[in-house]
Image (cartoon, rainbow over all chains, first blue to last red; front, side):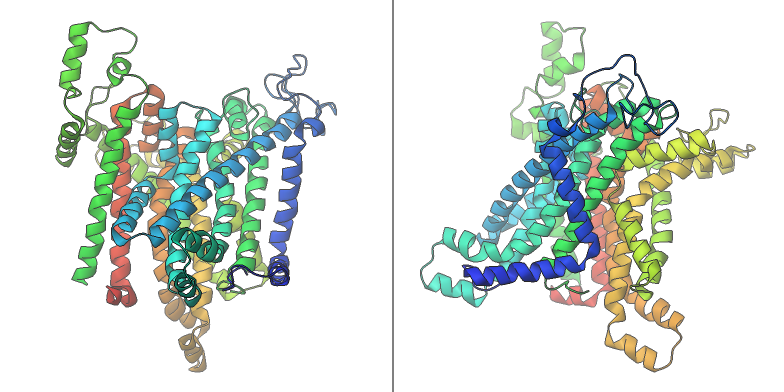
Length: 300
Length: 336
């Protein structure tokens, strides 16, 4: 629980909070499993070049569409088989983790920092500015997110970077709304009033006094948008509007594999499993974070 | 109540204006000259170029252009497709029934399974069924639906041969569209097997599109039910000796429905976003595929018009949900 009135929190108090958080997080078994899977995913992403048996773009022309090793015709040199160009599936999947991780991190950082800033401004701003900001967010939210991202990528040109920008922009209003709502409920609390009376200036009030106490729901949202970002980036890649071949991005791999679905199940199955497992692990973790951080929902 | 309605409508207008502004801006922030893009590779003479600039009103100041666009939109003029030369409005409404039919079926699938599943899970809280269902729901919620669609095709179309891979009906059948809904049209046509064919084409897209809403509805129903089941009046009902069915079905579910209805209403945006992927994979001729194809073809007036229509639709549905919510829930009504 971070919603202690004393934002400055002494070190032992912090430790106590952490212990309490961990206590609730650990109670949720799914969340702990999710955390383990996520840690594995991060390690794979960070050490991909060391872990992958081959270069993800290396083509073995004599081993085109090899099935996985345990299937008849498979070869342990290519444990998960090869794709239509003879590239090792396992190496491509391992390198794909890098892209998904990268997308998740960048999108969350961009969307959250932008969203929190705008949300803080909206929460502290005079009513007219607040209204303008919130109507603007309503406008963005009126478009289905994937559609808006698609259109933005059409404007910016298809690439992974542009896909990330588009997804971050689309996810950002959620942070604005969350931050603003928390700010509005915190702003009238005694500790904020006393900080104001003590002469704290607006930036200090915003970032030092109020923001730390609004973070709980934002952290949960960050976990959720991490998985949304991975899903949407994969969807854009699948539609040909994200990472471009031969990038071993999971969604792009699926798009390339589409025409082989009835002949070579493995080229379609494994990238999807990778996306599903990663997203599921993060969502499980998100549930645990909510249990640990959000006192209102605790034990419900 | 009237004040609540008015207040809600008042926030609708600026949002609508903003959405219109975004779709107006879309065509103007594209890299490259839209007129040259439109002309394709054939090239343009200078006179023809000037003529087109005048025809599209690009020679006027931006505020005037926006005003013309806005008044055009309000009169149902959304421009003309570069590719088919048909008005965007007509294209949208000839394709919309396909998306609507698919979305309705997906929603029936999602609510039909998700609602009872959520109720049963809540009533059996902590038991095996509850845990199994919630795990399944989380998997469904995390599903990359484009991959899910491919898996379904591999299993049900490839291995089992039960369902077709794409389209709305077999090419064998041909009849005029009366309602635009294939299920109704095929039944009306009286041709043998047409209706069955339409149903078989619908099954996989329905399941794929309905998966995420199903997971969301099941989770939401469960948590809403859990909240209601801990209320005092439920205990009173139990103490009165009412049957569990009556308590869960009548007392609890009715009150748990309020947040659930909101979720169902808000799923419209999810459905439309899902329709983009589902329709592309199953070659379903609806507005999702139409938008994607138009983006590929650089048919910008269609993208622009489609964006505006889809966003307006989402907004109208959200507004309706809000108003209904106000009607159902007296707490909200009283606040304003």
